[in-house]
Image 1 (spheres, rainbow, N blue to C red):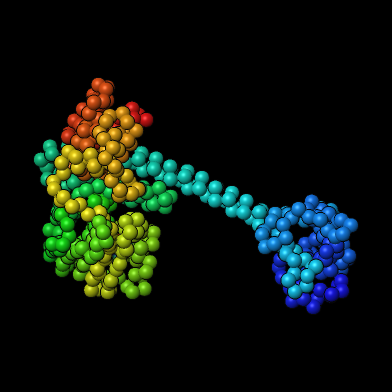
Image 2: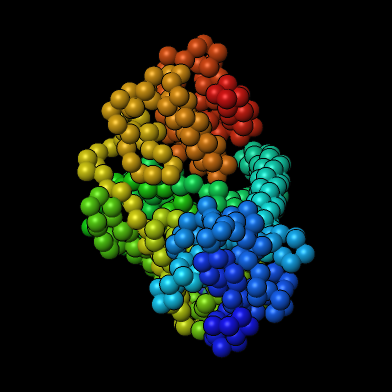
Length: 475
Ligand code: ADP
């Protein structure tokens, strides 16, 4: 091939720079990308490969010399333009099989790629920082909001107890309900921001499925009676009494589906069914379905239901209220638990919302004992694996890193329960904390005693203070 005969090559259009040179290093072909990139015209022919890659190639008497391996391996080289400026490339240099003595260099300009990579890394970093700031801000604001709301709620409840006048009593109940609604919104915002930031961790522990379902039912009893709806809850006998999972979160999803069903159903009935749908080794799939005879959802709106901030239409949100975050949070939580959400609905007839979650099985199925409480503490939030015997021992011994971690974990669960006003469960975690702190110095014992009394008295402010005190100690 004569120099300049490049156009006969189809590779002339390739985006990669292609150079062909001989044993002496003399360039006989450069495609358009190479000529452009190296800022040559036809005058590239006759130049030597050592002019392009002077760091790696030298001209010798018998031919070119190079430290660069000839083969398919990608290498980082520095290419020089005609005006002696340079830029980094990733290149392969091979010897032609069909034309021995001819070498082909295929090189990619990495300047732009490196620049883009740097931009991407920087943009990712900035997005991460912004997300962190946002999450912290939301967490702070919601926490700050919760304190006055709970303050109002606690005082209103005390006033309700003493109030004899029915009219004033009704107003106080309204205030109390408003505070509860506000707390739900605050919880939703907090959950949503944590899920969005990927900072949400599940907290699996052993729990009684029947007790959890009874509790959910009792949460909605007054609404069912108030609306005069028929209500049925059936639990398949196959559903184990005890399982290992994040009880609070499963409860939260079911509560959301059920309160929506009750909200959007004026007459008729609401049914909840719980089934065991699969088992793989010690993992069980539980399936929950909530069916109502309410307003239903249009086919076109069904797909947007689980998106964040989505409410079917403005008139619905005006009439029924809500932030439109509930179903999106449920979907994300369900997916964290390895399950899926589903909806079947017909406008004017009713809806069936379902979800599945994977939980761990408990062979013993016995009531929670002291060892169970300690075992629960040993469950990490990320995985369901039980710690080995020796590590369990470490958890029991006050002051070990494992014990500290378990204390911190249970303390967070305690405060979560208190914030959700689930005092019964808060007492359970308090008991685990007490057991974990056996043998602790007097100072810690004193804080724990104060905390325990505050939990028993359902005093939010004192629990918060005790929580902060103990947390500071553990840190
Ligand atoms: P919010 O947090 O505001 O209650 P959700 O995310 O729980 O919102 O629900 C979003 C929207 O989905 C509701 O505003 C309503 O339009 C629709 N929806 C949810 N459940 C039902 C149901 N059982 N029947 C009819 N519409 C429903």
